[in-house]
Length: 486
Image 1 (cartoon, helix red, strand yellow):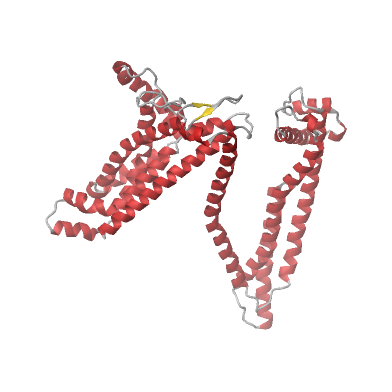
Image 2: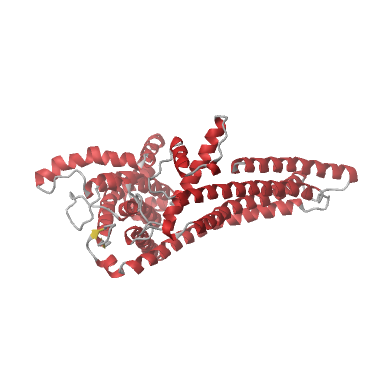
């Protein structure tokens, strides 16, 4: 039985438990004339929770643990002689899983055709032919031992899935009557239900923290493994980026950091002034009708997919800059350049600056404006000397958000700036960024045991530390300004 069907059965049992619990509470109250501690619906909620929650937790735990157990058992069946020289056992296990999935598809296809097939009785040649029928292509060097391991993998997975179905449904079916017989007028059903809701809220609030810890932990661990293979001094101070998956790589981060900051600075030079002027106009000068049209139109820019911006940079902006600026000035002949990516990215992040700054400026108390006008200031003087200083901390936050968005962008850089890692001040030259190289190093059939692959985690951790440092500096500046202003 599929996991989704199991969950549906559990939810049906929980709904049945809710109806029975509510009816039982009403009947107890009517028969004894005793006032219930909680509303009847809470009693139904208690039965529903007791029926569904333990069963769902068991289901999740089983789905997480079973693949690890099955894979460890099957991995023990594969001898070291089967593993290719220089390869890894994980790659062989990937073939085992792929063949096992293919065998399951073979059985499903045979069942639909009304013809049974005994997968266990098939030899390696027949298994290969059957897998080809369902679109699973295998190389000619797949050993017979791998086929046998795949059969065992599928058999153990099916058996474990059957046990899971029985255990989970049995737990839900057993929990329902046990909760039902505990219902009485004095049961604190509301307290139990609300305690569960509080626990769920607490777990939800911890998701962001635990996710951050998990991300940082994985980056730190993989980066440590990388630095055991590649010198940290060469990574941080080398000016050459030349990964070679067959050895002899030079993995210096400086060209990538230069390209990242170069593109981001150009985009901020475009987005920050335009975004701030839009925000000031919308909040201080535009009428309600104009604002209702202009602001949604600007925010549409934030909803355009980045791949569309990348295509716009590749097809329109890049050739325009090359034909009318780069080639006439003798600065380059490529349509991919830092300036192309920076201009298009600046247009993309304009809504981040304008929309947030507009909301922040509107939050400035009207009493500050009225006091400035009472002292004889004009509207422009009020904006420059009162409104913008009061809104500065929030505006700094909006600019930081836009900067983070620019630093983390990938598609626009790939299509607009190219993939050349080099140190150059010419904005019409093709360069690349850290995020682009993270993607390129993890793309393709690569093994997570080489410096050329693990360097992606070192790049990600470096970018994370730089972004965190920028946020800390900005927070310090904002706090210092607030102390002076107040």
